[in-house]
Image 1 (cartoon, rainbow, N blue to C red):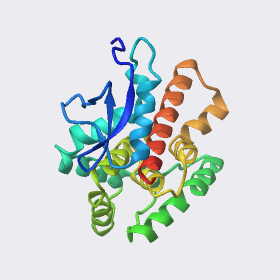
Image 2 (image 1 turned 180 degrees about the horizontal axis):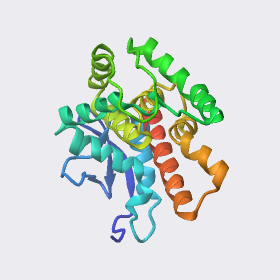
Image 3 (image 1 turned 180 degrees about the vertical axis):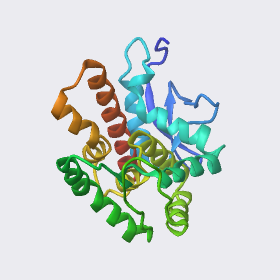
Length: 231
């Protein structure tokens, strides 16, 4: 798609801040006006559009994409997004520990247990740890508490949490990112701990390297989106 606009600016929008291209309000793919709850986020989205050259490259505009998802999908399917996100707690990555070798077990405990302890204190939701990969039932009380925390979020934060949870394979890691308990690098490191351990032992091929690079970029974009919601 070619760039056909020359001027990008932020504007006041209903209940928030929008972006205009040559004076016309920007719309989402779902034909809603693209608006953000903070001026900082709107300005960052505008900067993504200003940075486009003769060809518009959607892949270089993650903040625009996340905001549009919040407006088009989360608003329309909120209950589904809440349920999909909360369900990760049933088999959360950080609850499943290796049976061997000892070095991996120790690394998992060091990286994941503080996050589980934090979640238990923050949400009154103690999740149980298991060894191996077989699913282990979690306390219905803990699952309900985490689901309530997810449901309490506004659409923009819920969207960010949903994307972070899917990227990390862990609701606990994603909540810690959302709450500022950890940063993007720590979230990526925690979510990729097992893979990183294997790479240290056996090396990494080009395909895996590219996949991890893309994942790290996605998590960084989500973290930036969350930060802009705080401003």
